[in-house]
Length: 92
Image (tube, rainbow, N blue to C red; front, side, top):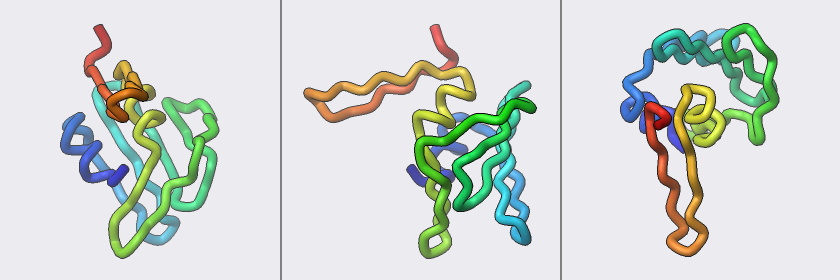
């Protein structure tokens, strides 16, 4: 999912380190650091594995939607029949 969509939806803050290609996302007390091409992420000081590494394609950063959403405290559900994702934040 394009990172800009997630940031806009959650109203999260972004810091970009262009030298090391590190993305820092902050929402409330939650802080995530991800690096382009790296399957490891720092979430509030804890190392977590991503299902797919963030990638940069033609100037657009793509990140795993479920990982970001759940680590921001959202409830994520997949409806296979409708092929649709629902994200509820904050989690009820």
